[in-house]
Length: 306
Ligand SMILES: Cc1cc2nc3c(=O)[nH]c(=O)nc-3n(C[C@H](O)[C@H](O)[C@H](O)COP(=O)(O)O)c2cc1C
Image (cartoon, rainbow, N blue to C red; front, side):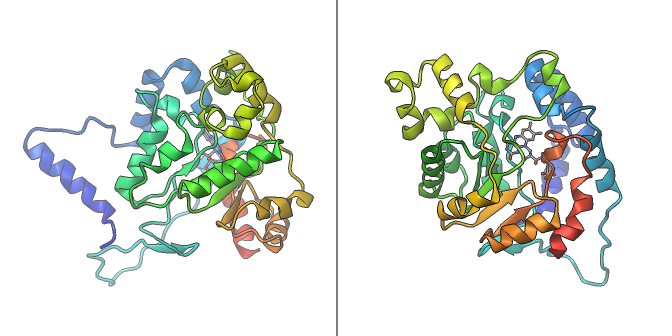
């Protein structure tokens, strides 16, 4: 039996008969408002901010509003079936939780990655776990239950480290590797720049690095508790500006489905496909990277065509 997502509301209405109303906001606007009050200003700035004047961030939202679903009638939809087949997996819905580095810091207990993984277990909606994580990927993967999980790789310049991260993801049971192509340097983000705020440089969300044998071997005396050394080593390997010449190497890292994130041009899509990539994640990083570009959803039809 597939998840019947609409049934969650029954729980809410029935609980209310006993006088219990939801603690959580029911709409996005209130969720956003309450997050802005609850989160530390540095975390809020990192989460809410986009690149430049945030034109592309807004364009993503406005363009999305121009698209809609046209429902079909007379189909007796008492049992809704949103299942999709993807990479040999049967998923309860076509949705994914996108990778969010620093989601760890968004949880009150500092373990937002684990909370997100538990939400994936409960809903059947897969989590794409970010490289930038407050808890090591192995601990995140343990919370997935029966829901498949994906690992997002920020390819480091240190190839041994890249290989180690991918093989750890395989061993931990992740079902695919999502390689983010648009972030070998961080976008120009005025909200964060104005306070000099960059969580990773303060030692946050680096547990996939500090738990990694290759990364540790690069530290003086292998000391992962030396935050300054960890941060310096992280900063020296983060962000590999990959070229097409690197694709055979990237492909060779895993037999798992390889998905490349950040492609919006049909030529890039064709070339990636020719290079053995299994999936295209059409995205502009929510307008957090390059500002001034088109909305990702407006690039999608040509990407799908390619
Ligand atoms: C706070 C925050 C952190 C993010 N961290 C990552 C990350 O670690 N890795 C990554 O590939 N994308 C990251 N993203 C981008 C998202 O995965 C996603 O691309 C973006 O929210 C836009 O959604 P879309 O790609 O589905 O259009 C982050 C986005 C936000 C808002």
